[in-house]
Length: 296
Ligand code: PLP
Image (cartoon, rainbow, N blue to C red; front, top):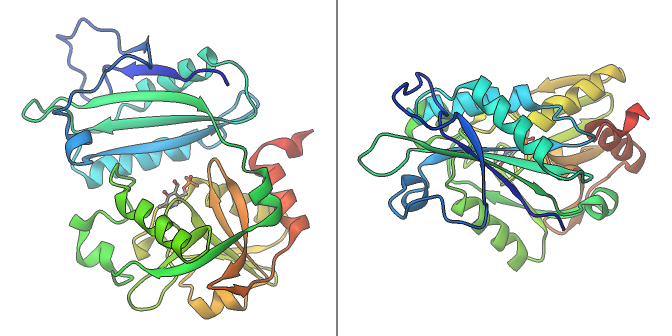
């Protein structure tokens, strides 16, 4: 497997520090240490990230990722990421990595070393695991209560729901709980019964000619893959809507997917041990669109 490509982003935010003599971005050795043990990204998970899918030499959702990166930074009161510098960093990481089917480029911006106020930032490109079996056979999911009401983003914005922060310990714990219950993944619900998102994916469902996803006002990430999936469905004549979704909506759906940049659209074939309907042909067509294979 080709080794990762690391790009250090030395001027990640606006305004730039003009006194610095370092280049805005530079390739570095990913096997050497670059992050201090005092970095707040490490000690507090205080920072943000994005994972961008690159295939066939393109990053089809880069604009949506950079927009979400900026909105996560704003929610955390971090300085504004400079989109031009990050775009260059992604381009350099992509062009420096050998060609692979799907490359993941992870962007990280932390609050930096305690007391300095200077953020730490990098982009790391690496090949991804092959998820094609999950896309074909589907996954078993359990519903887990996230413990917050659906309106938590409005009532308690300091909980940072809707920001893509580096603190994924809760998401990882939920996935381990799914494993203990004999499942592959999780759909989080709000304490008042609304379907939210998965620990690393958005939820999409089909009811006849309608494709639904829970609204971002319910304290969830605005999925870039969900948005690309909606473009696909709208072009095929489906009605696409972000609307409140309940567990009964999942149980009665003609299809349910978890959608994310690298895994793409994975059909959910079981919820809490009960089978759900799925649609292999539609899933294949959707994934051909997401991975740009439908251009052939
Ligand atoms: N929701 C959460 C919590 C996520 O972590 C992710 C992706 O990692 C998503 C949704 C899906 O986002 P995207 O489609 O942009 O990868």
